[in-house]
Image 1: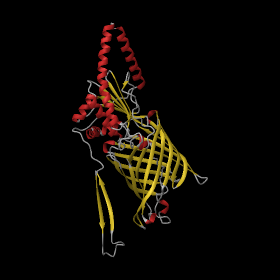
Image 2: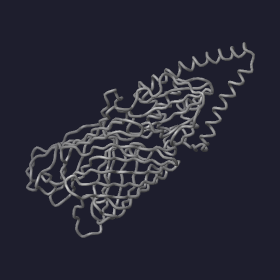
Image 3: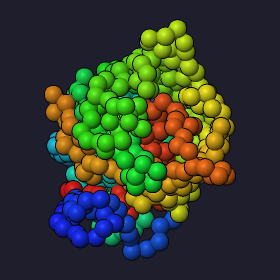
Length: 492
């Protein structure tokens, strides 16, 4: 919910105003509300286990169980199998209701299964809680505790993104149910990537129900170019409506289209005026095909190939490689780009290296980028982000061919839970819209610097799309356990 207000001045007899009247529109919205528990939260990740050894142990246990039954007298074996089948029917009913609830919530590529340990397994993709994947995880965990009530049952939840395993969580259902009911800290093993193998899983219905592929995802939001406190006026802007269409089509890959149409601007952004060349232009701004890979040791790689409009029209390729540490605190990225003019026999290229440290306990992240940028300026950029829920305010500085400092903010322009995708697609707002204002430093004149430290931004990228703005990690989940509980209590 938000508040919309109108302001205006109808008349003034002052000699210092060029116009006697003006009007304005103000909109305010609560961006962040901290979820809390009764007690301070403290949890540590469980030790990593060898996946190959666990897979071999699971198959061996299943084999030994079959041999044990074969050695029993036939009447006893039949009785045990019959009792096990009755138990299986009971758990089948519970997991079937669980799967139906997850599909009703709008999750996609949903697989639900169980074995006789009992161990419940849920795998899913999240396109409804686009502001933060932790909300999707919290609702899924709450649904498991709600629908499965077998004694000593365990759970494993696998979060997928375009088919790629991104985060796995494991624990005991009764323990998590107590967390939902009382706020007592749950005992969970959280790790990035693929879940440990679980033997003898019986899947409920068809796996990957409500397939996520071949559904257009339309994101609508503003695109703004502005100038603050210049010799031409207090504030000048060119505002456009931007539409991004993402179509996931195969494992880790898809097609992305972006377009803009200008909706308003001040006179200084008119053609032939001071900022006319910087005004938003109506038309296609990007058309790319992309592919993402999850490599060993926490490395992700993504490549975009296609059309890019950066003042001029280019055809090119952009590649980024990111390594994220096991607990998510450290992140290193390398970004490369090569672009050829569509109208000239010229090309551009850039290469940068970036590092980010996430101080999750204080909701602060530190960023540094160095290298050669798009407009052939070289140097370094530094930024500190102060997070408030899914929004942040940051201060930044850069030293390339000019020295610049400024502030920026990022806010979600979409509800916490978006519309559930249909077979025809989905419409949503921009989950992380950013705007910045900057000024030159260390100089006697404050000439406008355009495009300094610029990198080509794609709507689908590793950090925002796959790593939840760098927050998809065990340390972030442990520091925000209260939000797991709160989101289930809100949307149950």
